[in-house]
Length: 248
Image (cartoon, rainbow, N blue to C red; front, side, top):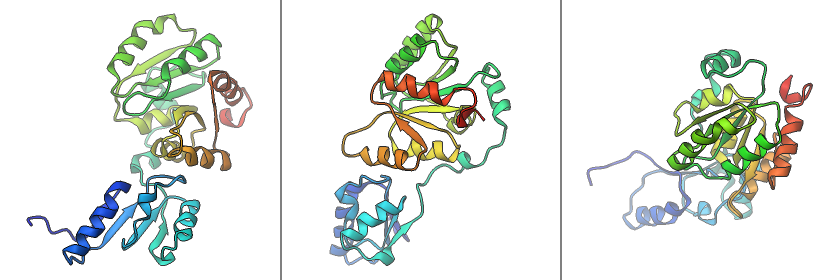
């Protein structure tokens, strides 16, 4: 073939078994690494035997690997790979808030629905607005253009200041300008928020696949799980209360 890689890295569980088998069948000795992007609830395909190294994000993930009988010398806890920009602030929070036209002194809540704008964003925004919480909202609708247009159209009716964005490429700045993030339990967003020291309110999760991410957030005391909008509003009220750890 035209492609002769020095190493193969897999970041998707469903590719592991077939890749390993293809290498074995072709008698190719190319190092194969699998980088696990689930924090705790690991899809069985991540455990494909025959990889040269398994890169996992947490100690709990390593325990699950070892319980499957895999060689401990091949399992390495290196954390979740994220964009280095999340760990390298270039401007202060106050500078970033001015950059986004935010009101000084008012807690900033970042609502993220993922790249496709899923995750109950609309319900969360309405609940926060109805509660008249002393906050301002940065809303990221991702690629959901219909939701973006809808929120832009009705934001004047909200009882809190609102700024709406579609798909953005400056998420590190968005997070560092904020005081709290509301998001579904995707492992990438969770780790990006942790890198920015941003308290997390989880508003939903994919059963099975993301349940371990919820467990990770709760066990490490870096956020809370809101099962409905009532819990979301109550949790947000506690986090932005003057004197809380979030607002110090």
